[in-house]
Image 1 (cartoon, rainbow, N blue to C red):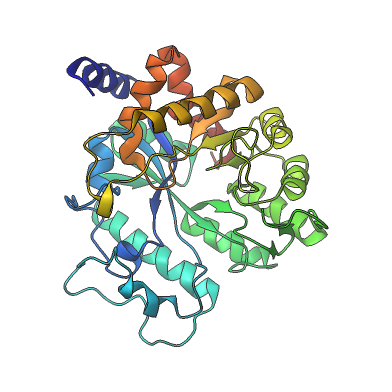
Image 2: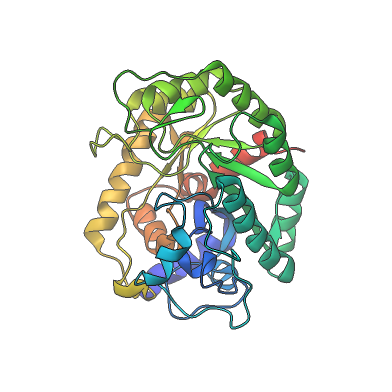
Length: 355
């Protein structure tokens, strides 16, 4: 960005709350295995931490962790991955043995590790349980963090597990990753979808009552439409793009997009911005990639209206300054850009979270 663009983006970020519907990956090896301190600035990577979120102007960030798809003993696999980095010298291991873990154990262990970092850095961040917490964090200028998880196998058909997680502060669940889970289907099931089951409907109702935001990313069309029609609160798709522009079962059809908008929900556009090699800090962004993201935003706004579109970077908040510049250059007013980059998400949170 040139100096003029830098100044315009900086003014925008100071004036409007910037929100990422999917900004911090608690299942990434650097946190789950290496156990980096999220309260310390990590100079080596473009991935977010509490310090860099503040520097980037982030006001609200969804942080998500949950069961992963590698295998039951995934901890043995992660240290061999190339993104492995040194972490805390005296860190307690996530697991004390290599025995297979139940998904509930995985989720609670990851969320405990995250909460320990939040509790150690209350000068920088605030965990959000309620609308009152959110408003207080925005007034005080600390980064508001929301805690989320993915998949249904860790809570299953037990409402009490869901309620306990909500008491701990869980505020979003991405319902699926693939296949049929509990009472709904993943994006990879296109034919013969069972839609929303009776058990699934009861758990959706419990999420509504517990103040947990429902995320349809990775859920197929039939189940998504059933869930939207059943939910009493707005629903989101935190990180997908319009299927009409990018054919993939992982993306969202016009039909689902319109249903989301009708319920007051939101589609979080994924910026398809490649991370630098080795996940080093950004020095620039490919303008062609930015143009594709703006095209996705334009299309979603045409289908859903300006109130129905947000940003879910899929753990890549660092690219947002360049995207803000591109959206403003594309002709969006600051007021409309402010809705896309945060205002719409804040509206959803105020409609879903407990008071």
